[in-house]
Length: 278
Length: 278
DNA sequence: GATATAAGTCTTATAATATGAGACTATGAA
DNA sequence: TTCATAGTCTCATATTATAAGACTTATATC
Image (cartoon, rainbow over all chains, first blue to last red; front, side):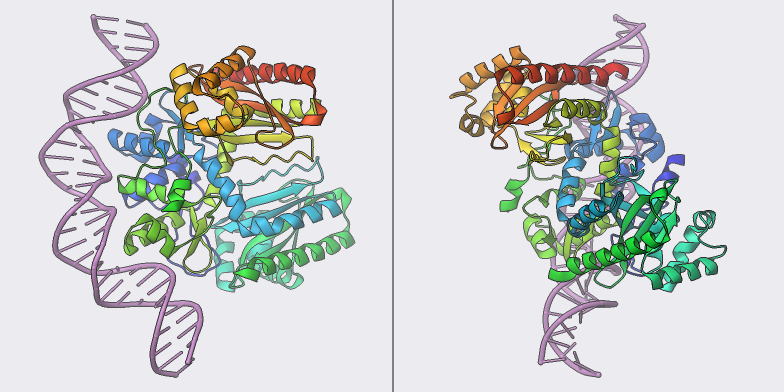
């Protein structure tokens, strides 16, 4: 049961759309067999990459034949794989699907050239990150600095309370939603110095809104500076963020400003490209 | 309907285990609602990364409310995402799961250092590839030659009939299974010069078996030489392959032999490491 | 601003099937 | 041989997935 709480939020794809129904959250129990089936994959986490049949049964509470049936189906579709006897891990179909995602994600496709350009111009790591529920997910990255290995590679979710990326997204949300998410992540935001109270944090976010990009010092990776600007969906809600991470010693205020302007320009251009054809 | 045929084989994780029941193949129709739900993801392919609701309904043949229900569930779990109105693509949860797969796949984890070593020693691309049904799937790669961009990055399935990787796996299968897979891929194998008849191909594979590694000239990428050796599962069935791809002009017969020996040694070592603890 | 069309959800009776208890099989270990 | 574990099967029952079609929002069009 404890593991259930560790499962990150799962929700509709477009967190920008306000008040859409049908959101899922980590604490929601599946209500039907279809959800129970795919929900089974939710027990896998970075902390628990492999599950025994008995632990699955104890955690999920399904009967033996039912759980075996689920596992059989998921295995036959490649979403699960046996690892040792009565032990299971995630399966190869996921790898295959991720390839397709990389080929279809507009943010990845249009962001890639800018990642390349930014990493060529600066000794940095550049990433494109998607907003996804109460978390953000790196979907593409490039680096021109071997010392600067991102602790958040593709697919690893980051919290919404820390770092330039998170704030570059929060800052551009409608006020009500912004406050809701501030409340959800208030501890992180305070710990990181984003403000003392919700109101204070909101004020600071407004400033980011005016500047057009967010800057953070060592909030995600010690010694690293993050500079991020939002990418918008068709309704002009932030849906992703472009970010440059650079070693703190390599930059001063002026350089940060100039990189910030670059990042914002690139993010705006990505936004434009995304909506150009559709 | 035509697209259905393009969907690659989906089957149990361990294709090495002979005659296991419960295999899925592309032409099998889902028999229950659970399979129909995850089976929906099978319509996405490299050729068709985005689907409209109407096309989905026409292809899958489910009723409007049912299909909407499926989509809603898959969206709520992040496996699908809306793209434009009534259009859908694969969703961000897949990215998240792929990250977990990268962290849990023993072949990826134990293979990585060898990929690095091989690419440091030679100007080449080195990959680890998993056997998965009637196809092989790259799961990790590294390159020290920018001119040599693999046309098969992580997650893109390759056919079982072409290239050193495929033959390095076929060559180590029990004879019956080998013949079955030769029959399935006979056109490719012939086209590529692996032999004239099934028997001829089998004989050539036996030679690969004796040598311990397979070599192929420009079968996958023109001008490139592939050198591959199998990685085995607990039952000593081939389950994956380690491969070095190198530009043809850079190698002669002697060098190929020496790289082949290296690759085989590395593959054997990966096999050992995988089973060391479990 | 009215109308039309499409996107998505809800309601319902009915047919379908998912479920769990427990038996059964297969496999490997002691 | 016996014992334990992994995995499947059978079957009666209760659950629930299903499709037709009504309903409800959005989005576009005039």
